[in-house]
Amino acid sequence: MDKLIEAKNLSRVYATEGVETVALKDVSLDINKGEFVAIMGPSGSGKSTLLHILALLDKPTSGSYLFDGKSIDEYSEDEMAKVRNEKAGFVFQAFNLLPRTTVLENVELPLLYSDKKESDWEELAMRAIKIVNLEHRIKHESAQLSGGEKQRVAIARAMVNEPEILFADEPTGNLDTKAGNELMEIISKLNQEGRTIILITHEEEIAAFANRIIKLRDGLLESDVKKGK
Image (cartoon, one colour):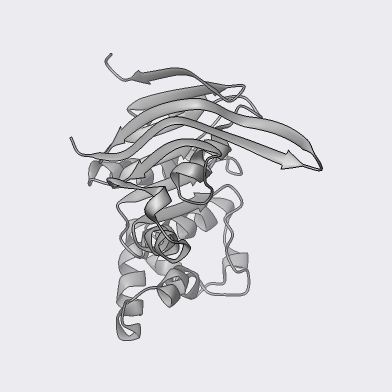
């Protein structure tokens, strides 16, 4: 399989008022295109830091990272922004929707920063909304939706540019069990259709949807297990 992510000896140190905090220590891993990876670990283990580096939202203090065969050191800020918008989708625990904006308008937002023609925006947004089965809610403002529906809108927004990789940071953290499982079924289907998924969770039942589970502790890679191995 083609490697999408190649990370070697990634470390991330944060300095605040002269005090250094080591969030990640010498983490090495490869992720192939089409994999579904869950990253687990207790609070402060470094999992969000790792996700932010892999998603090109942050850079490591040391180590090397190749995304789609190219070192992130070779990307300009503009190129990184373009990759984030076109090749990656993001889903966060807090939904991050505009509350007084309709479902359709929320899903169209990433297209503002894309090269897609404005005349195609509605069609692209509707295609993404159909993935999460919310066609009947397109004219509702996000403030009128349940938590599960809001997160489904967030997935549609993440998928509107048809990215090849989806990064999800505790996507079920604000949902009840039923809504969380429904959301994970959608994410699993995206993976079955060929999308690479990298997901952070602290819940074993959510991680069970993945075919590979990486566990961090104190910034270190504790284990990396693929299903069936």
